Amino acid sequence: MKRETLQAISASRRAGHAIVRATDLETGDDVLIDPATDVSALGQAASGAARADTSGPAQIDGRSWFLSVYNPPLDLVIIGAVHIAQPLVAMARETGYGVRIIDPRTAFATPARFPDAALSHDWPDEALVKTPLGPRSAIVFLSHDPKIDDPGLIAALKSDCFYIGTLGSKKTQAARTARMKAAGFDDTALARIHGPVGLDIGARSPAEIAVSILAEMTLVLRGGKRDRTQS
Image (cartoon, rainbow, N blue to C red; front, side, top):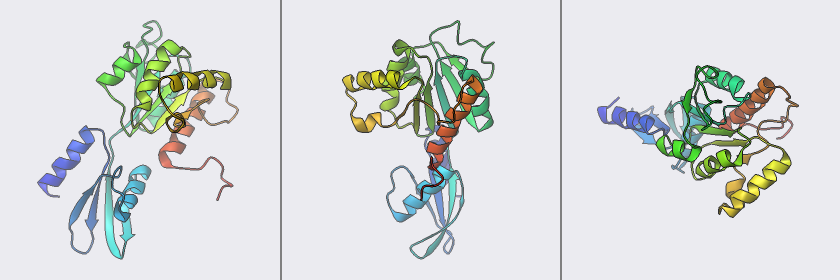
C-alpha cells in the first residue's frame, strides 16, 4: 500500500468517517472511495460493503475489483443513565460499540453503575459539541426529561448519525415531535427518529428493552428488513 493511501485511510478513521480502498485486480491500481458521497457504480458497491462491514470482491462494469473496507469504530451515545442503560451498555460493547453516557444528573451517571462506559455530566448539546456524532454513531434518548433530551435531540437531528432512538409512549413521541417541529425541523428530518425506541418484541424488563433497542440499531445499520415476509 502506498504511503499516501495509508495516510488518507488513517486520517479518515481519525475523523470518524468510513473509507473504502478499491483495488483493480487486473492492474493493481488503488482508488480511495468515500462511500457516503460517491454515487458511481463503484461508489455504490463501496457503500454497500461499508454498511455491511465486509471486504471482498466486486464486479463493476466488466472490471474486477477488491473492496477493502476501513470503518471507524461504532459509537453509541446514551442520553440518560437510567436502568435500561445498564444492560444496553453491556450488550452494545459485546457487539463492537464504544459507549458513552451523557447525563447531567451526577447521582445517576456514576462509575459504580457504569464501570465500562465513558461518562459525561455535561448537558447533551454541550457534550456533543466536544465529541460530535458521526455516520457510525447511534444515539438513544432514555432520560424521559425534555430538559435533558431535547437539546441533544436537536444536535442529533443536525448530525449525520445513522440512528436516533427515543424512549416514550406514542403520546410522548407526539409531544416530542411537536417540539422538534417548533424548533424548525421538517417531516423528513423527524422521520429519522425511531420512537417509541426499539423493535416491537413485547419487551418488558430493562434487559428486554435493551435487546429491542440494539436489534433496531442493527437493523438500521445493516439495512435489513423489519418483516421477513417482505420481498
